[in-house]
Length: 270
Image 1 (cartoon, rainbow, N blue to C red):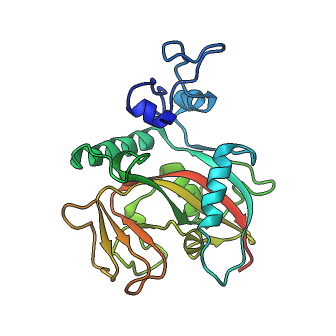
Image 2 (image 1 turned 90 degrees about the vertical axis):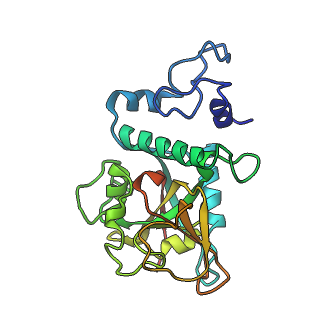
């Protein structure tokens, strides 16, 4: 049983801010009864401010290695060279956005009869990690750029990091969506790259996001008139290898169903 499962099962007390990870043990003890109120200093600081932020991940930490592996393993387009990873940041979302996401995940879980789908190790609400390509119009996270978000309304990277996703912005830069007006994701990082744009080449940004897939409707044909998933479903999953789709897609229609988890900055010469 990992730490998040232990929190879900109430074996360990949850951090007062993120409500997901266990509270950090006090020095010299690891007992559930003798722990701090937060899982770490990041949550402690964010509890005080409630502000969104990104925090740099060292290349030797397990979290970095996990994200790195997902990104490289998901680069599937055979005619594309391998990207050069520059840095990975963990995303700390606004307190209200984070809590809305958790509430939505719990609601979907309840609507599924409380059953966690996907087998051992699966998370509430059929929660998964998916990539989303973004537009970068500033120097966020780049050499000399720092970690302050810009105010350029066209910089979708900073916009999403500050306020999370908004279905109202769907198709802002594209006039057509395979499954209608929703926010699109993929577990194929090289597909997410197709939807990146940058003012600072060769740097590109992709977000790795926590998403509530719930009860997915599987499609292998276009259905571009959708504005919500079919009744009884929470999302649309485009199945690759059949019909007209070469790589997987996920489409979500509720703002609360998705939240950025990691910012991946990489170099790629288009």
